[in-house]
Image (cartoon, one colour):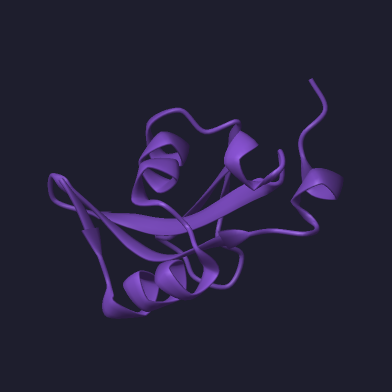
Length: 85
């Protein structure tokens, strides 16, 4: 189950982010990174066609069987950090 913190819900509404985009980023990210400032948090990244191919960044962590979403936003600099394959 995905749980959204209030901060995430408000930011998603403000930024026009559809929860299905977040779900897709969590289920099949293009890549993930640990959150450098917060051990235990993960950043999942996924290019999203609905926002012009920009990369959606979702910050989250596991809480038992649940995934808790702290925030989701288009990340302007993600493409620069994307791992080379």
